[in-house]
Image (tube, rainbow, N blue to C red):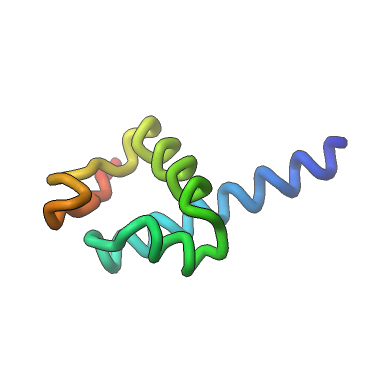
Length: 75
C-alpha cells in the first residue's frame, strides 16, 4: 500500500543519512561495522552505499582491504 511504501522510503532515507553521518566521523569504517550500528545486514549497507555513490555523495579512496577510506563529496 501507499502507507507502507512511504514508511519504507522514510526508513531508507534515515538509514542513508545515518551512514553518511557515520562515514563523516569515521571514514575508514567497514561495512560490517556500519551494518551493526545501523541494525541492517551487510547487503543492506551495500545497497545504501551504492545509492550514495550513484548520487555522487561519496567516493572510495583506496581499496577495501588496503586501508582505504570513504570521502564525502561536498555539494
